[in-house]
Image 1 (cartoon, rainbow, N blue to C red):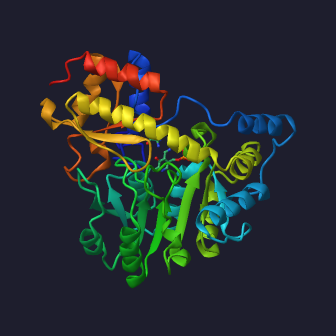
Image 2: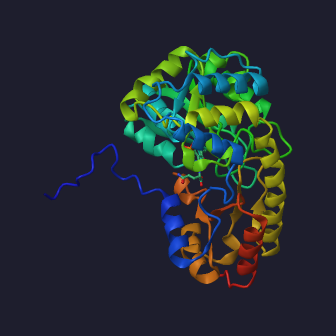
Length: 387
Ligand code: PMP
Ligand code: GLN
């Protein structure tokens, strides 16, 4: 058989860079500032709840849309933080991480040939799942160094084939948190062209000095917006893969229509614990953000003192640098050499672009203990980083 075995819907999609770079970190013993996962777990009591659920018999299938306690806790969370009132039974669905919510949303809402407008650089599951749905991505670039939304470019990207806008704020990898006026612009374009918006807000609580504004709170947007989040980033429990989508019943039902054939239902023992986290440890994410802010500044200052141009993020736990000054052909070559040169792993973000705009950009994670960040900075300072 000479034909490729992989179906066209997956052909040409590269393996996720995160797995690749974490494997490189493990193989070389490098400090991993690549893949975004914290090296300290979230609240102990929350983990104990999961343990109790496992021991207490919550080990069979959860209801398809999620256990009622978690759906209710998610609805309360949206009300408490954003004043959004949701019916937990029809306007909330629990998913296997935000990743499943994104995939289910694309499969449920995008028909072959439909165009999906997506902010470039894009988190890598977006192009993959758009392609799996048969959709066509239309990138709108957040340009370095400010990484702000270009509203004219967004407007120009709309065509008569546009089905939806896939938004992400706070934005991975740039750290941009869209401002109320940028969100207003998205809203007016979506309303004018009658578009749906899927908004990935997994970093909703990890913002520094700026508030997180959910798109669904902008007048006229709730009815056309599907909002996605998860427990992973807010509570430093990325391995749990408990996520959710919220919005008007017709959009939540669409996600559920796809989700039931992807995973049917998500991890039963983790759901009551996630509900407990949202209900009883509501301040934990803000405390995490305050702590991360210090680590952000430590990393950014350290990278700057190495002579790198750093973009200080408003949200997420990633900082981006431009490595042009070091003489490399691109960020990918730099990141592949870095573990060997300096014993540090970072992520080249050029793979998150269709255009050339990210060729020299490299992302560094600061969701690690300060001593690990210092260790990485020390290693970088002691290495020759030039090509
Ligand atoms: N969206 C973005 C922007 C992310 O950075 C991540 C990182 N994990 C995800 C979605 C996936 O979230 P989860 O782990 O809950 O699937
Ligand atoms: N969201 C995390 C990141 O951007 C990890 C994603 C993943 O490993 N798929 O680094």
